[in-house]
Length: 352
Image (cartoon, rainbow, N blue to C red):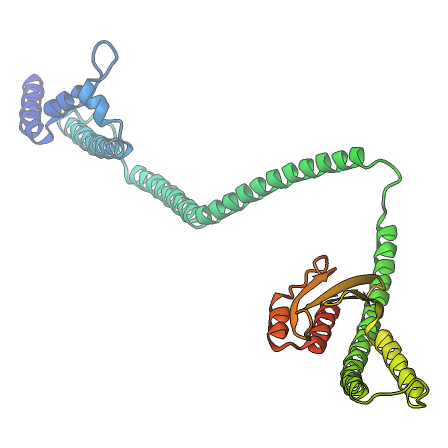
């Protein structure tokens, strides 16, 4: 009778397993799990190897496999519990393990402790993930800053090496005694003072030159007036026959001599030679701002037996860079000898 009960219990367990195996799909899941194994030679198929190269694909596959294993574990625990429960029911009371209320409370307490530890571990893991998300950008910024600082330090080190090499070359090129900073400052101060003194001298010379130019202009005007007076006197002398013992000849000669001397002093006329009947050569001396003298030779050529100016030749103005072509042509057309001489001398004095 007891054996019949055991046989009946075994048959019912077999029937229960057959009915539940279809829902658990253990056989098909085992086949699917074995299909993920590597081939016999230890290498995965080429298509699978190409697919698993992508980390995203690998992550999806690992996630699906973990989910599948969790479900399989849960089903296994569930089926094991059912099996134990069935065995405890169909077995003899003497052989069946006894589960009291205290055992259940103890198991509940243990499960509660495990759940609390699991919750704490999850909270810690969540906190770690949160810290990672928060600190990752800061760590990246610090890394970028450190990398930039490293690059900057490398560049500065290279610049220091280049500066030391340049300094070594300078020391080899310029041996002792070298110019110190104090000596350079003293030299600079001395040069600044000299430049200031020279600037003041230049200003004084410029003022003197301006005054002299004004005096020369006024003297030229006076000379022009004296020349006109001389021409009138010569004209009157030709018209009036004067005897040798005429008393008016001496004052006239003195006045003419004084006029020529004044003209020489005002215009710096050095020499005046009559080369021929129709050629007159005048040599003038002019001074520049530095006190150097320049000589200008003006040769006046007239039409024979007339006072008509034919041509003018000027020497000594080429070295100071004066172009007198337009001035000479304009005065030759008007036959203005006095104005020509004044213009040539004024242009030369302005250029130097």
